Amino acid sequence: MTEPILSPAYRYGALVTAIYDADTIICDIDTFAHMWKKDEIIRLYGINAQEIKRSKSKGIDSDDVQVGYDQRDVLIEALGLDPENYPRKVKYHEVATSIIEALDIDGDGEPDDFDYRVLPSPVWVVIETVMDTSGKFGRLLGIIHKDGQNLNETLRDIIGGVEFYDGKIHPSDTPIVPPKRKA
Image (cartoon, rainbow, N blue to C red; front, side):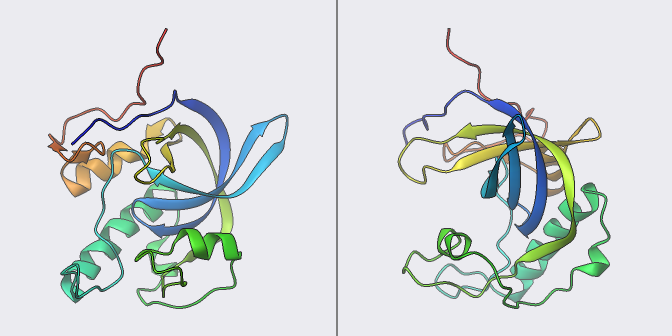
């Protein structure tokens, strides 16, 4: 497998507005002088959490889904929220079409049932963004910091490993830091 091509990391203030699962969030990013990039889907860099959607074709059963919810609850807690306020069931929410299309998990072009957790009030974080331009996903990756804590590393410790989109699982003590900028 070839190495993914990652752009340099940039640091922004952001409001986490929703959580999809333990490795995907939706946030509004303050890009500069209060110019906002709204409803940005961020995949957490280095984190590959269990899905919270059953899939017979991918071998994801109800036990796997419960693990996914447990991992998602760790993220909710790390953001300073109470997981009890986010029930473990799938339901539709009124969301922007672009978000539903971007979360088209099976790639069939139709919105999927998904457990989209809109937060009652957005949570302020600092996010380091890295663009994966390898072509496979071409998505925005992020490292979330709250109160000086790297939340990606908090999740890494729960999940038990790190995956940097190179097809390998790295040891659980691997630091999650953005790639270095080339000189």
